[in-house]
Image (cartoon, rainbow, N blue to C red):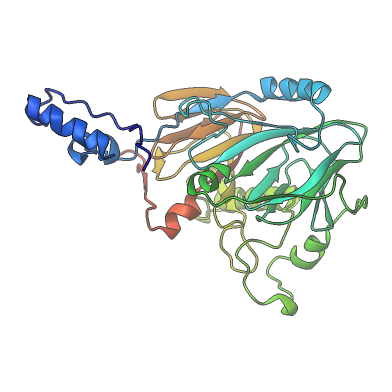
Length: 371
């Protein structure tokens, strides 16, 4: 049997909650290292903190910097086999250079030049696209061409063939969200290449999935079985915008329909179940009316926000920023979040909440006004 070089290192200390440092204790710790054992009493503070302590830290990426960097990559980096996508992932500074926004969430800006194709592939990771600006790209999912326009949310469950093509004379950028870190950590990922080009150049205004599923409150009788993830491939901005506007209008009429005064919010849902659009990702849209501030809120699990429109002040833990259109920021697990705006603020949000809810590890706390 080949000897194993132990990566375990155990340091005896003089801390009040640790055993007395003696030669015998040092010998015991060296024995533990050789046998690949780690004593709980030296690690419990890190392994079992009194509240969640994520390695991820609050961080903000400015769209005014991301967009030019993506455009420069568009000049230098081809789209094709190898990188597959011209996508630049947000790397949280607390995660040691890994291309992860949080320990469970991937967020990236993807860029496609005029008349380019992003090759077809599929993977077990669940994904979505959210468009903060532009149009002209169609994503083709299992042969169904889906238009991408500003404000559109386009979910896509894992293991579905998909590629993109830009039919316009302008480059387009959008954000991708995936559960790559979660699946990477659990060792559950599969990936497969498809054709170099999408299977259709059609560019319909509405995809087949929308024609079948995008009718509020109506469900085809031929599709009554629930599906784990949504079969609807595009949630259009005009419906999201109307839903948020109507919430604020009803609130002004005295109806208690908002999550907080001046704070309207909607969740994108799977029309076959009413649950989350994807099994590991929750996606929402939030609108703050002018002169609105939210109460501090903490949640187990992490989230990424993108500013869709407006300006505001964001505070995550002890960190604050002034944000504007396109900016992206991270809220790590159990870090309190406060939003405020003078002129109005629209925010897209995605989180890993479904994972924690299925494991019954979800928890949240929101301060009451005046508390």
